[in-house]
Image (tube, rainbow, N blue to C red; front, top):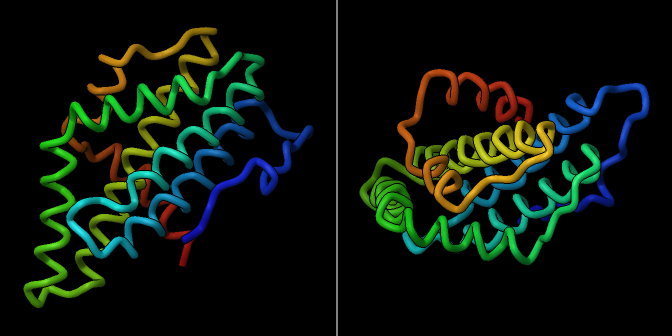
Length: 167
């Protein structure tokens, strides 16, 4: 599976902070989408890749906006948030696994899982981008809300522009 690394990211001095943050979000969406597509289990073995990609993305964004970022603390918050949203997370993973196992195919199930990973990565990236611009952070409750809010048309269209560039 693809691993996101700040070593792969070149800060572009000709671009704004926001444009550089968007580039990090795009890399993380690609990483989590690929991990989601190839995750064959309802248990979500892609979750560690997701948390790692989010932590790396946010460490880079914190650097861009001149903020301190505690990667270990974020990993605890993200794990707690995903744990709290466990039924939702388990439900989405189970749905994609059922699609894969019942003849709808690996492409359909993997595609849905990839897209959901991309949506959640986009939400986390954009929320932290806004927080870092305002020199703040997200509470565990705000993080939980990101993961359990209904998916909107804005989510879908925003993430689609990133995912279509993967292929």
